[in-house]
Image 1: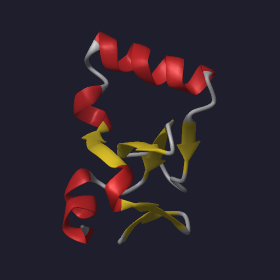
Image 2: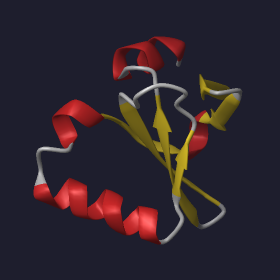
Image 3: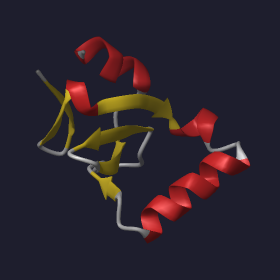
Length: 80
């Protein structure tokens, strides 16, 4: 199954490691460092048309990707 995450983008449910709320997670220094390093490595994909509210950490075929989504974690949880 695929999970629509906004911006005409969908990811495979099997590849999702976690769905995180940007408002709550970015308070932690390690999370900010992780997201900054992923952005420098080109692993961050923005699918949010508006301000991103959550991010999805995925791993498929040995590649890690982070998708920034405009949907809240609650909305994404309901879509699963």
